[in-house]
Image (cartoon, rainbow, N blue to C red):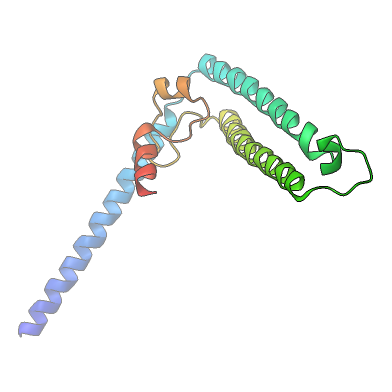
Length: 163
């Protein structure tokens, strides 16, 4: 008789657990639906679209500027040495170090360009300003400071703490 009661209690606990999770999921779905209905007004979306387009153009110009002088020339041309004599190893190391530095800068700018493109797409979809993690509106203050922000301050801090 004791095992039957224990088994019934276990079933009750399991059912209670599943019901509670189901209700929580429904509440969350309702919350996400409610939040996603709150969108920035068209005037603000246009403002941010113009601002992001300007940032995008500047990034493309920077990337092109980084590419031209260092990546499209040979190491010999970069040093200005057009003679037929062999390079000194130190000259080659310096040229390679400069190329690597430029590639790292370019990589960072390309990541930022990707983020801007993603946010411009969100504007077209009508989901701009909604945190990708918790689905609440990102503060206007944060969007003014970082128009390509995809997370609210709280979620960004949690991600940074997590590593």
